[in-house]
Length: 295
Image (cartoon, rainbow, N blue to C red; front, side, top):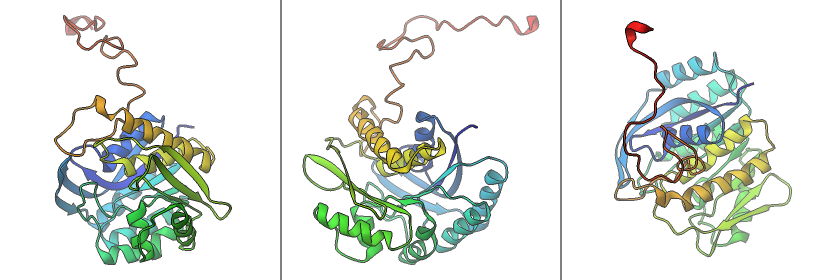
């Protein structure tokens, strides 16, 4: 069966985050991607300039269109800025019996712009988090969900991961990418012993869409039927490499995107251009298909 994953999130007009990042991630990791758009954002690498929320009834129409036809195996949820949209998404996922739900509680863009109202945070906490297989907050999002101070060390992170699990998800991945130190440490907790997931901290300004990419990578792995902790570990490795190779992209003047296709671009032949060729002179070697009148 084809692994199918759906992203329910906002659109990023610059392509670095939101559903655009999610669909790129699905494709890079071998999953067929579909989408339900919850908001349109006018943004680029410098910031968010405008947000247009999609009405709840149209969000529901998208859910019905996608889930009534496609055999969806995993869902990633991102930006949900309005309470009625959150409730609509929760009801829709219930109606279609979706269990592999990866919830990224997006609250603030990489640029620092707020993406969700306080009322929506309360509804998210009460209605959607208990339905999630796993939630993937960063340090600031975890603090806001728990209404407490931000974790400052790994002991704090483990305590907050346990507190987040009390909100109802089956697992928590508390991301420490916004912390300090030579390592980027995340804490995974599913009620057993906390698991420390560490990777080298990559110095890069190209961090736009990292949270979206991680959560959608987890959804892609789940669509393949893989074990959750294994998927989380591999997803973190994928994002780390996508950041490390983001310098191969020159996109915008601010926080650029990660390189979702780092394992493909420049490593496989495209348009007759062999890996390693910076440029291609002359006509591309497309196969001859003859003239229209000959077909």
